[in-house]
Amino acid sequence: MANAFRASHPEYVVDSGDYAFERRSGEMAIDLHVSPNEEASGAVAAFSIRQDRDSGGFSYTVGGDRKPVPLGEAVRRLDTPESHALSAALRRVGQGSGPAKEDVDAVLRRVSRAKEVTAVVELTRPLTMDEIRSRKHLPVNNGVFSPPLGGTLAYWDSQVGTFCQVCGGDGDAVTQDFRHWVDSLLPSDEPALQHFGLGLARLKDAARAGRIHAYLQQAENPALLRKLLKQDYVKTMYIVRVADHCANGESDECSWPDDEQLYD
Image (cartoon, rainbow, N blue to C red; front, side):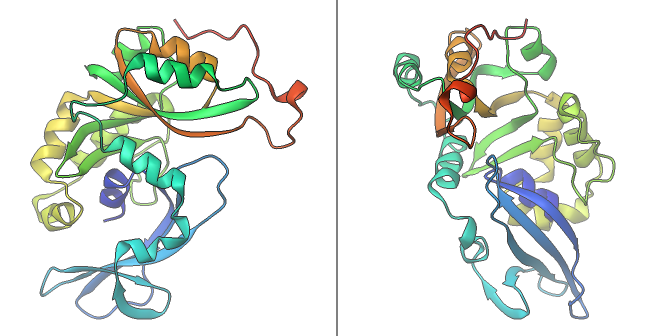
């Protein structure tokens, strides 16, 4: 359940989780601590995901209150414009529409060197991590391995998860970690996967292909994003967040260097 939530809700990061101490007989329950998938947010939401053995139904609860609540209520304190923007951008991947490159470039051109930009980078065609790294690129430690289907995508990153003991959290091994998790799934996991809009066959296909359709570039130099945008393998970008490059606001110290280049 924890990893299915993680894969289907990339706007959040599962910071920690454990089997719920308070659970009834015939009930499977886990407690999760979740934060926004953005730099230095500090906000955390704690809630439980429960599955009833007899009905197979899932519910969310908060604190000691066993009254089921919608997921939106469970993560309400993480509800920010940035999380909405990230969710909307990721769910546009593979839908055949997106901002024109020249429009994105015009926005990035207006961003000062004292700012950092978070963007979803959509690829012209799905590529493996090795194929991306064989081109001019920026570091990639996450990916959309299956584009939105019915609004739900399959995403994975290098975050070490409590419920993925075989995942190493190595940014260079995101595909391997995704495959490790999918390989650990059993047919009995299908109800949990379906609850989160996923399916075992779909995940198996995505893991076997090992190709990403898009990825999240966090807190990056806008000048480097402009250079990345010019690459043929990049279809477009969705700008999610523009923020100060560093907290003290001293522009002389916080501006990006002029000579940064993409990796070859």
